[in-house]
Image (cartoon, rainbow, N blue to C red; front, side, top):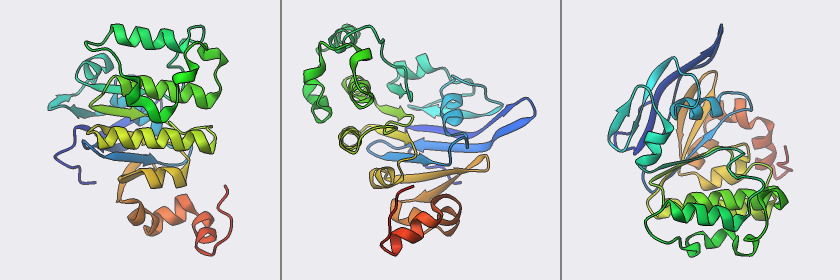
Length: 248
């Protein structure tokens, strides 16, 4: 896979193994400023493993990471964060006993300028301020987590399954917020299994299969890629073409 030289963030040819099991042979993913890269692949194929290894949160046998003009053979999330990267994990970002307002105040104390909730307006969190994270629904919690990411004004956002287990309305709000973030110049990487939503959202589609990654291009190019259709989209693509149900 030919990696773009103008990417703000690049995880290049990462290899990961656990004991005698090879998880990633040579997997790569990247993000350009103002663009959303979507990383797709079957459950358990190694998407989260790739992300965590790229951020120094999991084991890595080889490969390296570039971000903001620097190269790391041993990436370290706090160092990447200081340069403008924000990692949104698939769960666990909020303190369950604390209110939304508490999280917002804690964020504001770490920033130079007061936060502007208008930047996260599409997520609709204004009415949630007094509620604790424990009292929020899964969709509300995810919208608050993403709002905290947006309000940091990151140069790069890596979001692991940002649409997982959300209602259609919440998925739409999160997708709009991610698009607005990218349109503001942020480099975004998002993973997940919500195929229609993610293909609509992504500017670049990367497919993970058999321990490596494949650049597929745009969503339209991905849909026309014969191997991707056969091995990942499967009969779903054929049903969609014939006008049948696409539920999976």
